[in-house]
Image: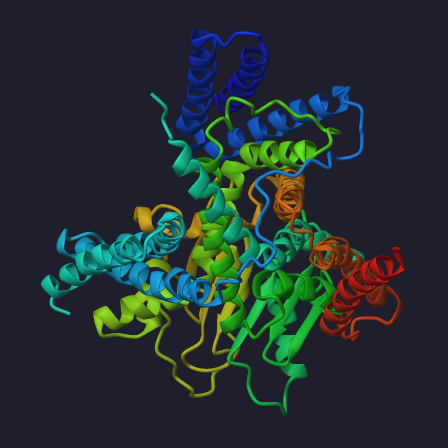
Length: 185
Length: 427
């Protein structure tokens, strides 16, 4: 079943390549490609769990990269000098905005890390309240910390106004703090 | 209705560029060394070709080897731990490490030669801590893992057509199209791999600060936080005692757990009344690194940690390591990790070139910055090659860290100097 699952995942990638290469997109073919990929992964998981999923994932990724290399080799575009065209010219005396950038860095790295840590520890506290085994609560917190930090960093860098950035940090910090207070910290 | 607004795409692209600029040089070094260190065992074999190799070693020979090593260290402070690396398909050697050094032993348990794998060790230190002290360096590399996750998130938001164009590669187009195509196509297809590597790496690197946070909440220490996952250490008892019966423990593994493959032994507090043995054994077709089997000084089995069949948290923790290292599917798995790791390095390299190209098209020409980036991209493999050459010519004691950073610095400065002289010679 394991190798059958990996085989199905490879066929799914080939089908997606075919479907996406047609002049007009076919919803049915696309859906069939994704469904086959899901089937391949589920089939691999049914026999060998996480190991099966990972091996099927590696094999389908390798297939996609081989197809990509074929596309690169077959590309007939003539190499030529880059265009000298200029667009959306920036002002010559472009300010470095050092203060704003330092603030963004501070919010994105140390402050966001602190908020992410508060939320992760709060998740561990919630797991305790739900009577989870300590190992499950700890691994949840270990996984959540980088994930939450990455999401906060992305949101902060996408928010334009300082108030929005403040909200991105304050809301989760308050939620986390509240949970920890309820947990008796 | 559009799924993602143009404004969101713009902001995501700006965030993607900001994170990339902040992290790209170090991320490139970590990705490139990560791809190379997948072959850790193979590098060790290349470094020290003369070390004795064996497909397996008898339990009695392991016992004899431990006794020989401990006898050789008489007169030195007693080692607190002794580690035995057992032969595997990737590294068919038996190596014993104590607080005082590491030696290879032959199939009879006789000490053969000191272990000399300093270059592989340097490569690992560069990947997991950028050669900084481990406590600081691992956190920094963990932060780079976080930045990689954020780059994946913002990259997806910034490119709503990224899946639709997943096989479109204009490999040689001009005006930055080829660079963007290589960057986006390799990024989208290595996305599951990249996310898995980034998350598992960040969990490893940021494990200690997270555990410190949990310890503060629980009012305990970091060791106690990890105890429910990996098991705890027994209470030490420093009274002298004869060397524990390692052979009996290994024989028990053979008879009681025949489907497992022991590959690493931790011998706690050797030659004391509190000594005990932990044997880590791999389970075939599992993502986790196996389980930790505990034995007393007489070699009697006391139980296992439960990393292979315990709680979900224990199994996930165990899988986190091998999923990151890529050593769960033999040589084909390692080759896949190497290729995908190189692809990630290309994604990082092209990302900054795309940003520089965009700036150029907007009238901001930064030749020195561009030259410095060339210096990082070509200087890193050059500096690594130089350290490897030093290993082959000078030997195990070559100052790899100094050679690497000085060579990389020279490469960056050299590229900038060449660019400056070109600019000055222009009419």
